[in-house]
Length: 190
Image (cartoon, rainbow, N blue to C red; front, side, top):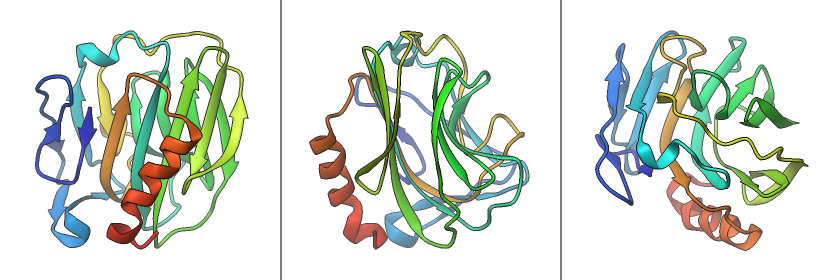
């Protein structure tokens, strides 16, 4: 599944649409981005079958934070933190099965590429193509839940732009994460 800054979500294994809620705006900059106001904006992508029982995989996103305000700022999430990439203040976090890894990251005002990868016994967090945190994956799957981009419903709203979100049903290798980061460098000035 991927969201590429156009007005629809692209699904690599079928068809899926997202619902823009509470004034998410589309801007044509950088090839297209959705802008979230940090108050109550979000995109609801429903409960795609392909994301319900993943025991391994990758969440990848490109984002731009306008500010570090708010307790949490969700990039991609569900209702229970079973499967998410988020900020808690100035800490970038990746959660699988309510178990997270994180890195301090306070920079705002520029684009970043992030990837959370998990497999049998491990999880890793990458920022701009480099591994920045790792931990143990306890084997919990992603669950059958509604998924969101830019907020958890109208709570924990992201303050900035999210032009790209992809979910892979397999863990990307470090080389593949770097390849994806390099593919976005010129578009976003990474």
